Length: 228
Image (cartoon, rainbow, N blue to C red; front, side, top):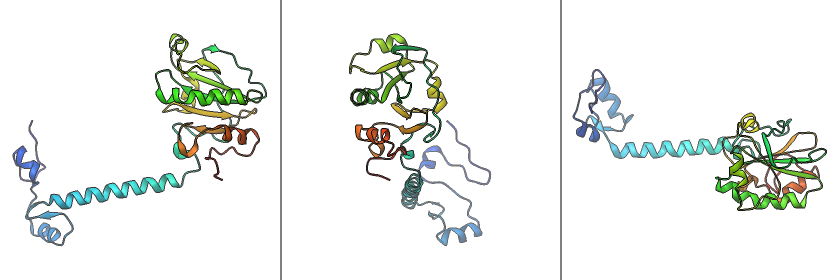
């Protein structure tokens, strides 16, 4: 494979180019180089200095990302979809109910976007089973998969003890711009989203205690227990 250099730069064999990059040695360039503005030495790159600059740039980028996420609203840093917290949630749409349809009138509705092939989704199911059983009088839990009917019907482990529907068109997921699963939204009886996010993320983990607080109207910000 041939590599061409920019006009005004000296060409070098490929093997040599891995070791050094040649630059035009004009007086202005020498003045600029020897003032220490660039990690160059004798017309070639000083790779030790380059490595230091790369590490410094990586550290600066990490710090910038940390500052960026620290300024987000509580819970938002762990989202894998468009935020609709405090807003009207999407209409409940499925192609077919595998276990259902659920009685949603006058109840909170928890929707879990999941798939049978997804290990974290399977990890979420036992907790959702407990939530569905404990709050059955006030809350309906629904799992929605974009898979085929046979894939969901043949899913056995762990056992799902709440309502399940399939929607290969993934209409609700597309409306929410879900980019990773499992992903959960919890809507109140008026359809307003009171919790959203990945239920397994430690900073905003969905638990029975969080559900209890939301049902009592004490929270609806998606924050972790003890925050706010």
